Image (cartoon, rainbow, N blue to C red; front, side, top):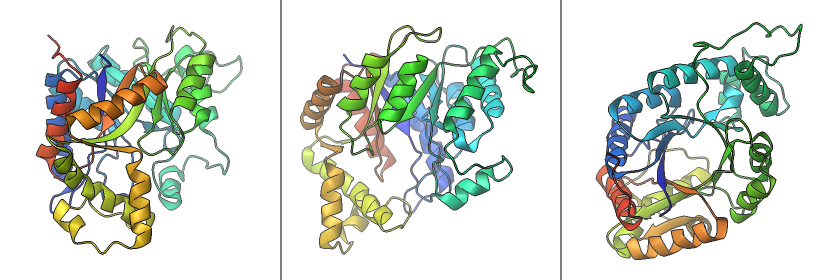
Length: 337
């Protein structure tokens, strides 16, 4: 069966604190480890009241310390926000402490609005141009120590020097990251949970263009999808009403904690709101086990994904854990021993 993994944004819900959201992440990670999930990745977002996941490297260490088998990584580190040397050293430390269990997922976007992005980068010599590729090349050169003679960074070593960087994955919602990941021989994760692009296009492009590297000999493609599963279609639809309202609010620039189904039911939706919900539901998979399995199986067949990475945003932490448990059961996951 297709391996399953978790992408966690540490959702903050109405009536609870951001601190509780982070504790819920630790609890869910322990549950995913026991269920046999392959990876647990943490997102990086800033200045968003509905998301507590702002420092994935810190949470990776916390989760790795409380689990035994599951790989733990970033989904991802938003490279425009960080000096490449800082990223290299933090993930080398994590790899040293938890060898063979850490992933370094990298993203091109800042994970926030323009002003907050400026606050994150204002002492880094901000460029108006997209400098992701420059930062990525610097990260790789720090690892390979392949800066040309005379380069100011020629003698800079990311510490601990005797520990390799974890496996690198590039994240994307278009075909740019698919091409880049294929060119450098890295893993690729496509964000189908928020992209309107047919995921089969970048996934196929990645496989066709892949060039083996010392890091990865064959292409490895992860399909990230938003899923809400419950015991029945009706129960899942009720849980998903919170995601519906969250999407409507974000479209209006309202970044609030995730509402409860009761709050969602009382919201005065407009006709445009309903259209937005219908649009988002086309990429959000909602239902009982049979409905969800059918849709996920179709996505796997269309994209030839090596792995599914599931993100679930619901108000109830127990309902979120139940969703991941149902997925583990339907895909026949076996707890690691």
